[in-house]
Image 1 (cartoon, rainbow, N blue to C red):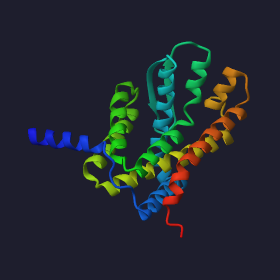
Image 2 (image 1 turned 90 degrees about the vertical axis):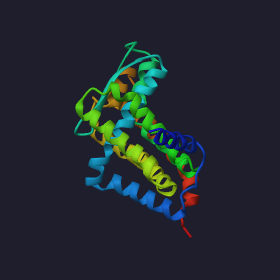
Image 3 (image 1 turned 30 degrees about the vertical axis):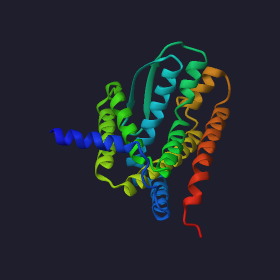
Image 4 (image 1 turned 135 degrees about the horizontal axis):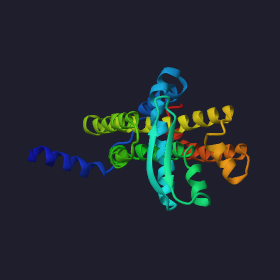
Amino acid sequence: MNGVLTQIWGRLGASWHPGPAPTETSVLVAVAAALAAVLLGPAWRILRVVVTLVHELGHALVGLATGRRFAGFTVNPDMSGATTTSGATRGPGLVLTTLAGYPMPALVGALIGQAALGGYARAVLIGVAAVLLLVLPRARSAHTVAALLGTLAASIALWWYADSALASATVLGLGVFLIAGAWRQLVNVSLHGDRSQDPGVLAARTHLPAMLWNLVFALVLAAASWWLGRVLVPRLPLQ
C-alpha cells in the first residue's frame, strides 16, 4: 500500500513539470480527430456532454466569482443542461453568470490546448479531475452523476496509463474539441432562437436584443480560437 501511495505521490509531483510537447504529426491527428468529433453526428451526440459540462460549470464559476451561491446543476440525456445559483435577482452579477455559459468551453479549450502544447497535459488532467470531484456533490440528477464519473474516470485513466505523447495529443484534441463544440452550440442556439436559452434570457434581463448577445458570444469564441490558433498552426505539418 505504501508503495502505491509513494508512486501516486511521485506521479503527482512530476505532473507539474513540463513534459514533451506533441509532435507535428500528433498535433495534426489531434486536430483532425477533434473536428471530426464535432462535425460527425454520432460522435457529437456522445461527446457533446463534455461541452455541456463546461458550459454549465462556467455559469457556476462566474456565479461564485460574482458573489452568488452555486446550488447545483444538471446535464440531461439530450445533453441540454441547467445551473442553479442564488443571490440578487437582478444586476451585473446575474447577467455575467448567465453570459458565461456559451463562451466558457472555448475559453477553457484555448487554455488547456495551449497547456498541452507547452507539455503540461498531465497537470491539466489533474486539474480536470479535481474540478469534477469538487462539483460532484452539486450534481442534481443520476445522469449528471454518471456524466461526471465517466469524465472523471477517463481523466484519471489517461493521466495514469497514457505516455506523455498520448496525453499531450489527447488534451490538445480536447481543447480543439471544446472550441469547435462551442461554435456548434452557438450556431445552433442562434438559428433556433429559443427564448428560454441564454441569449433570450439575457435579452429579457437587459432589454438588449438576443442577436447582440449572440454577437458577444461570437466575439469571445473568435478571440479564444485566435488565441489557440496562433500557437497551434505553427505546429502543424503544413509544408
